[in-house]
Image 1 (tube, rainbow, N blue to C red):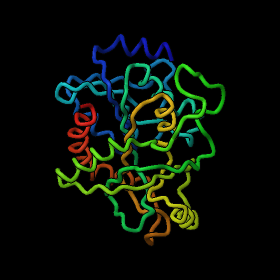
Image 2: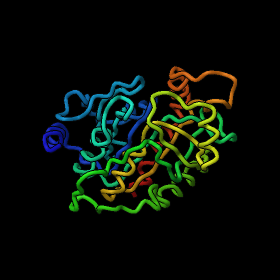
Image 3: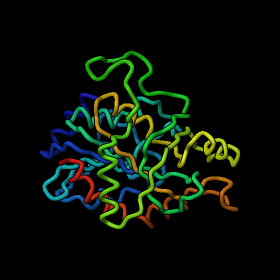
Image 4: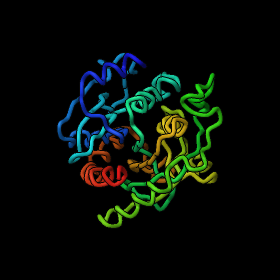
Length: 268
């Protein structure tokens, strides 16, 4: 990780305090940054390579106005064969670079029957059903506590700011619980009924390990899901990844507009 940090510091003078992680089909935001410096993950020492379709696989430094921002355009997942430490490597590097606040975005399936394809969901909490935790193993007490509190994994202050801004901008923003499974197969209708019963509103295959690590390291977190499809059994049709990417493209302008207004407010 030290090599990655030194390499990135040598490439840009921008030292942002806030970052965003962009999920499947949602990488368009990174293209809107000014003074942009794009670094492919393949060029960063130790950084795992993204193989998922819809993930650009690059780290972008840039600005929104005068605000410095780091953007992970794409992430890696457990289903790609990576372990929890590799999945959270990028977040750990960002923290070491001085990032204090981070916004995670993802593509998710809608479980709550009131949701619609293309809707934005503000994550209020999560359920981890991935069968692993990135903090398992020896703990470095200089980074975070052995047993970190997760009662407010997603900053209440940030959620209130996001809701107020969405209202001002006329953007519909529902609040809900995200459940993470390992994938890569989509869930069965029976699994979706189970997930709805235990209180999940949206389902995906990412984000939770990163959020756990971010909280462990004392970062303030916000989470946003884009409902790219309705989960299995809700509509009489099969699910495919092309639909996920199509919906990401469909909501691109709304998400970019919202994020460009949101990040400066979170950084205040």
